Amino acid sequence: MAGFEDLKATAGVDFDFSPGAQIPLSGAGGGQTQVSSALAATSYRDGDVRAILEVNDGAKVTDARISLLEPNLGEAFTRAIETRMLAPGRAPLVQSFGAEPQTVVEHALAAKRIRRQRDRRLTVIMAVFGVLFLPGVLAWLGLFQLRRTLAGSQDKRAGSLGVMALAAVFVLIVLFVYNLEIGGLLQLYVWALLPAPIVGWLLAQRVCERAARNLRAHWSDLLGGGGAGARVPEAVPQNPNDAEAERLRKGLAKVSAEQNSNMVHYAGPKGILGMGPRWGRWSLAEDLFPADPQGDMDGFRAWDVIRAMYDDLRMVNRGPLHTGGFRTAPELTHWVVRHVGEGAGSISRPDGPHAEGYSMTPIEVQRICNEEHHGANDRHYLGARWVMHDGNLVLNYLTRVSVLHRVLRVEFSAYALGPVKGFFLQKPAARKGQTRHPFKPWKKVERELPLVDVKEVVRLAARAPLTWFPAELDKWGGKLSLPEPFGLRHVWAEKPWRHRFMTDDALETTTPVVREAMRSLLRVLRENRVDVGPFEAKVKGISGAVENPEPKKPDEIGA
Image (cartoon, rainbow, N blue to C red; front, side, top):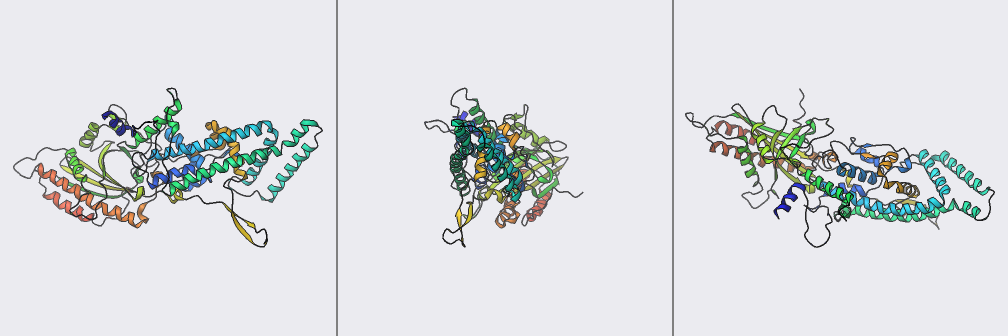
């Protein structure tokens, strides 16, 4: 079983040895969080795709060449997630701390499957009524495209001039058909050209309404905390030659493996990508002298100090009293931090002989910790992470130990990633309209409208045959491009400082973490016969400073 454990650790793949086919389940590794569910629910949403630009202006929406083929928010988000996270040769992803990226991707695939089932039925309807009554369908599509061009695609009214123009065109078409000098079956066929597409529309409307209710049910369940894990049977190969299923399976495993990478990227004032901006920094620097002026101190390395801190921070959730305290121990990681710059559009992952999957090998991490202290790009940091408030708050505390000449320096940095923006927490609202009371015409009553109106049915029916050619649909209908460097969590995050309890948790966590690391440092120095007197004075100063830390912007240097 050791081989399976190794594969699970490196690729993030969970195994179920019960009888039956292996169907990936979202959240198999640790349960869904509120953030994961909120992001996953976006794949099931409807509405205007440009609304997401208000959340992060780094996203881009390509304008449609044919507005009738323009995707809605859920369609565009699903397509963007699939192409950005599962496409062969994709760019590296930023880790999504506080969220489960595989869960979001699997829900995107599940939403795609619901829409694909709807589009199959719509394609059949379009084939029957579109091929047999093609001139009538083209006439109706032309009218709707003309109306959409006049009104725009954002639920604006065409105006009186547009309505009059459409009515005039429709009357001309009817007069032209009626005055054709034909008879017999051909005349009946020509007369049926305009009404027949209406019958097709009624059938399409039922298909679209059923799919819309299904999508909204998933959307509502995920935001309500009761959503079931997404099943992705498309990622289960049905035969040895099932290339598409194998591509999805490997893509999902790659997403999980990259999430577990031990390399992160520092982007100037943006902080460490995936961890949020740095809000606090404390450092200690003192000369190393032997405790006995006539003797020598023992040789030790930066890794010895880091390893002692690692061992002690593992137990920071245990206290002398049976009350309060951390709910869980921190997740400790030896990070390799690489600088990419504030405006970087991409990141890199380790490669070469020192890489193991998407991570640096343990030997290389130890070498960087001991040797790369000055003038090198990659630096080692010991990280302690807590994920709180159901994934809405991610706290990271990074510690670096370096030695230059006689000076031993220990630097502590605090990073905080806040909740996702409220846009992702919006629940579906019923469509309602007002009509006059049948027996009291002076009164208006509110009634629930169908989820899919006439324009939406036409749009979906027009897109359905092209969904089998996604590249062409992107070309003619437009698409959503996600912000880069892309990570599911940090690109949509807010600052946590407006939430009282999140702020308290971030500030209060700092004190025990820094003090425990300081105790570890002093213990290692004593064990190696170093004069700890100067260090103790500095430790007291830092210990007092972290009693009441204040969020600042240490990465925004005003020089």
